[in-house]
Image 1: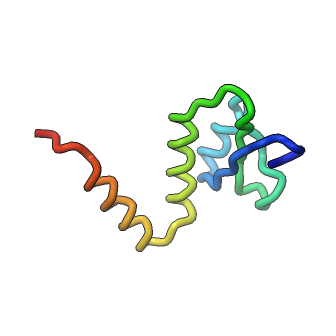
Image 2 (image 1 turned 90 degrees about the horizontal axis):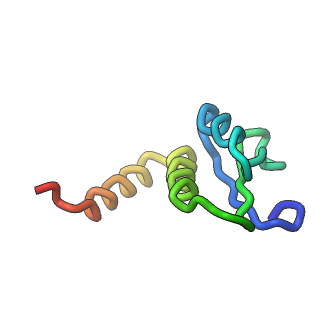
Length: 82
């Protein structure tokens, strides 16, 4: 929560952070030395976008072992293209 409002924070690559900050409902997180972006979640929410940002955020901070496990789990869940 920031200023009494619910929000979600993301650690993003600089280009993704710049793009997010141009959108309504996004703001520079007041902590994290400018490396984090937050979104207000007390109104209409684009959950598809939030999900994408959560994954990008995780990929920004996760180590190689965790990324490998994530990629393996995504492959296991993906439907067979045949």
